[in-house]
Length: 100
View 1 (cartoon, rainbow, N blue to C red):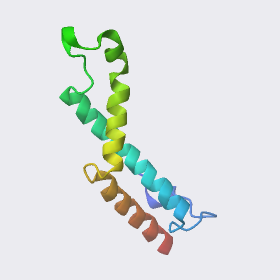
View 2 (view 1 turned 120 degrees about the vertical axis):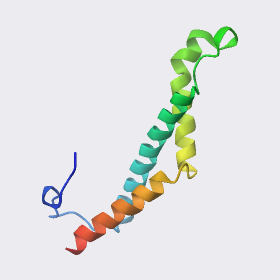
View 3 (view 1 turned 180 degrees about the vertical axis):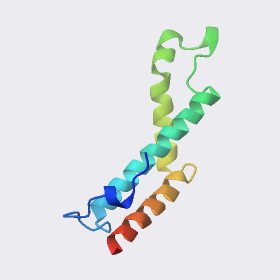
View 4 (view 1 turned 90 degrees about the vertical axis):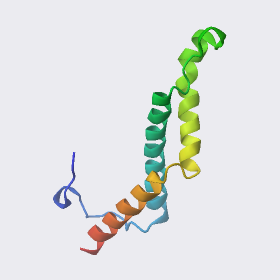
């Protein structure tokens, strides 16, 4: 769903340069990148059971938790650069709306 300028309310919202809002935005885009990385790792077979010598049912059940944790750590450490790009674009968009 695309959001246009008329759907965003400007009244009573604090400026985007507020540190709390910027930190919240950064957290959101890092989580988005982590989800993307986790899906890439899933497609590559990370966290899947390794057959007869694997961890059995427990590995199958909890492999996704390990994969998600690994993806989050990758995203926090810079990951693919997707979160930084999204952060800059979204921050610029809010700055543009603020200046209108």
